[in-house]
Amino acid sequence: MRLHSYDINPKYSKSVAYFSMEFAIAQSLKIYSGGLGFLAGSHMRSAYDLKQNVVGIGLLWSFGYYDQARNEDGTLRPAFTRKFYYFLEELDVRVTVKVHEEEVLVKAFLLKPEIFGSAPVILLSTDTDENDYLSRTITHKLYDGNERTRVAQEIVLGIGGTKVLEALNHKVDIYHMNEGHAMPLVYELYGKHYQNMEELRKHVVFTTHTPEAAGNEEHNISFLHEMGFFNGHSLDTVREISGYTDSDTFSLTVGALRSAKIANAVSKIHGRVANKMWAHVDGRCEIISITNAQNKKYWTDKTLIRALDEHEDYEVLARKKHLKKILFDLVADQTGKMFDPEVLTIVWARRFAEYKRPDLLKYDLERFVKLITNEDRPVQIIWAGKPYPFDHGAIDMFNELIRISHHYKNIAVITGYELRLSRLLKQGSDVWLNTPRVTREASGTSGMTASMNGSIHFSINDGWHPEFARDGRNAFTIPSSDPSLPIEVQDRQDYENMMDVLENRILPLYYDNMREWVVIMKNAMSEIEAEFDSGRMAREYYERMFTV
Image 1 (cartoon, helix red, strand yellow):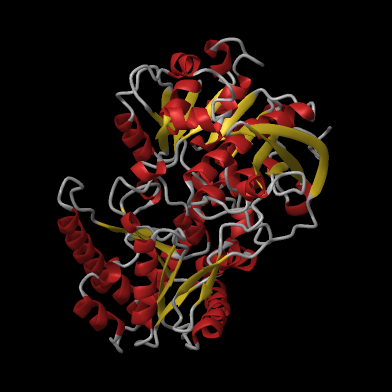
Image 2 (image 1 turned 90 degrees about the horizontal axis):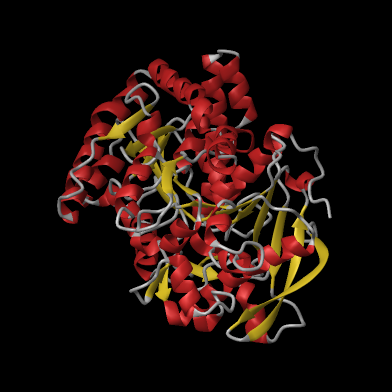
């Protein structure tokens, strides 16, 4: 079956299957949670723009990640609602995978390129009448909290996805694992398509996205064997081909590094961190760095870009204020608060996780209150983001910010952080705040799309930021503390450095020199495109990963 409705560019003729647990391609296709999906979505859009021979392989989550509902007091309540997608085409293929010795039927659906302007994406589902209830739940919820369900999802993605491609007679040259979730594909390919690991490795590449321990999944090797993760291969065979000779803990990341011909980290800093982090792994492949990027065509406000291209400072500023009004209509709808487009508006919005420090702004509550009650140089602050629904610490952080916001008319915490809201926030903010602990943010792509829309990136010097930022010219940089210091010392120093820059540089510039502020906006919008549009990234994957 021909999956591509476009003619392949001969430069990108090598056939690539891109396996990912999530794809953020369109607001209406709710099969994503955060940064990994946003990255995969931009990659698929740029693969379409460049007419690359890429097919995405993912899972069709019946209930998505979750919907952000609210309790009566405004706090977060995760809600799960079944989703229906009539724009997907059910494919005439059925494959089975074995999960805990039980046969599970996998159906496949196609997102055609012309629907949203992306490479074709095949989405797999076990939620079908032919399966028993337990098997149907495998593809119910993205990142299910149950360990057995998570492993079953990975079996369906890796083994089921590979089998579907084979059933469709779709030739694959390169299997790209976007994170280690698709690791079972190695055990489907081994002994069936390739008789030894040396040959198999020539066809597998791997992207690692996180220096966080929690993001590098581990399980007991016997448990994985029992679940069917290794596709029926004996433990002796698994240990031999994966290099696990003396450990009962199987790391998906380590397994992927030993099974791929090449791997990449997602920023230059992350490349250094990843090579140090996995230096002890015998038999691992080379880890290079290919910095993440986002699809400018999808994310930017076209009128704002037109004003930039025409060198009309007044039009740039006028359009920005109009975009702020659009965002503030949503703020009023959710919170009943009327924000002012003339006031400096700071947004912190991304996945809520402790190391990202969403609440760093209120570290010193007295200083924070002084900031938000200053009438001479007022600020408005918006928080948004999705905590993992079982991360109670992150949910508590989210809810504490909501409780604080009840006392101030210029603070808002918004729910529904998905593609549409993310784009509104980036287009309608003046400052995009990023506060991770240094070396712990692999890339942090949200600031790229903010900069594309004239929202000035204000960040700890981590992830992609050092590759872009010229402090005071296209961004503002928070001087970083020493990462070897105790966490409480890092937090205090980073907070003080952040507030010093905000109070002494950003606020005076915005209120006293708007002409220079617009220059910084324009610099950000102009300079972000060359290296941080995902067209560059999609080309680089072919040149450095797929065709080497």
